[in-house]
Length: 128
Length: 128
DNA sequence: TATTGTTATACTCTATAACTATA
DNA sequence: TATAGTTATAGAGTATAACAATA
Image 1: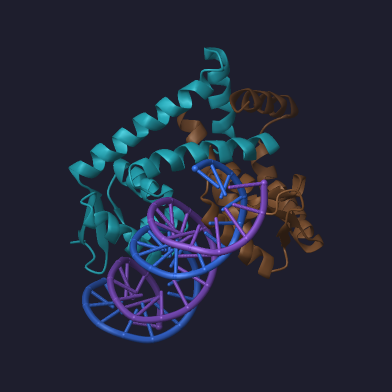
Image 2: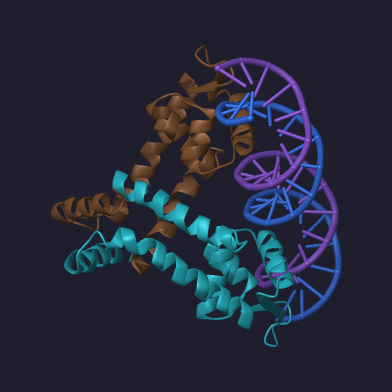
């Protein structure tokens, strides 16, 4: 339990540092990460991140100004706004992910292959 | 690797929610957590959290106003400021820790005792 | 000169409340 | 009426730069 919390802070520090090196907050990075899988609506993003919709408006607006994503009224429901990554946004999130994985490799590298599989299995059970 | 990052976000959400229920940010909670072990100086806190010293001034000032900690010039080095928990601060951080552990129990409870030991061992190796 | 900390400033993150537009 | 989103506002978190006090 204590080890879980300690590791959480440790990993968060890595993520925060790398995101900041690209002028991204951890939250902005997560927004890009969600959109990497598929476009989403504002409400969907807010729910996933546990943030208010007004907070999402600000986050998305700043990211849009930087050219990382685009938003537009949904044709299905004209109240709704669809948000999607731009090419630039996708490249940025891909680059950040590579850096994150590179940064975590020294840690994960302390485990042998069998231990890594074991850890993944345990964590998947945990956060299933 | 991916499981580590996902679990990190999951645990962070739990920590953030419980801290917020006590009007604490995650950072404030970490400040209290550090001071729980021992009093510290401003610079030490900032270094540990990876924050600028000016950021620490604000964090500590707000926590002091709430009566959670006290600060005072160090007798050893009169430039330095020692920060320590108040009784109220200690009770708060203890209460929050209990809630955090309670909230994580359902997750960790998905593992049997042997798996929990195994997980702790792997995470300790990881973030050693 | 170097270190410790605070303050002024500016920007981001965040929630609440009030609002508009659509369903 | 209810839902989706924006805007106005206020407060916290954050860093940079300039400063004061001490070493």
